[in-house]
View 1 (tube, helix red, strand yellow):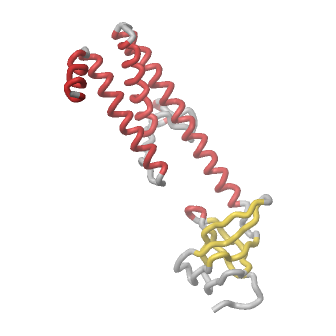
View 2 (tube, helix red, strand yellow; view 1 turned 120 degrees about the vertical axis):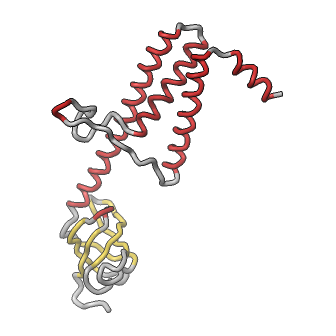
View 3 (spheres, one colour; view 1 turned 120 degrees about the horizontal axis):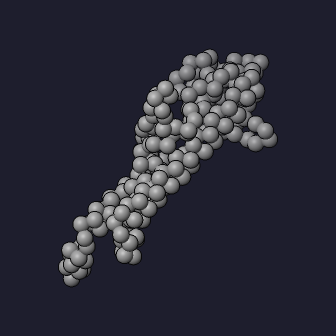
Length: 201
């Protein structure tokens, strides 16, 4: 009965309503999948689409990109549902198209702005770690020798205790060893050296 009711409801819609409903459902599903992936630590790879600066650019700055996978999904999600609501309220097709497009661009801009702010936070975190170079810390999880794998170190920065991955070029370093930070590598991994008076085997 439910299937028949849905079929009758779908058949009662106009062609333009079919289009808006299809867009709303498909892109809402994609939005949900993207959200769930983010919750478990996975994510869609963003593809930032830009145009060379001498021919115009979709970016407002070097870091702010308006067009990406996330923002496109946001555009069509807002576009679809706004169109559905306006058509159901009896608005004309062109009114629905215009206001749905406006809502889509607003959604696209909001998502792009949020991602820009997140990227700034990540950059700030990296900059803070750069300030830790030549500071000292303590090994928490043993660090294997000769960059053969990461351990972890405790490091105090601006009054807060951070726990970070670390590797060393020399001998392995056991828990409790005092180390000096030499460099911040990819993924915020620290390159450290022992500052103890003896060598660890």
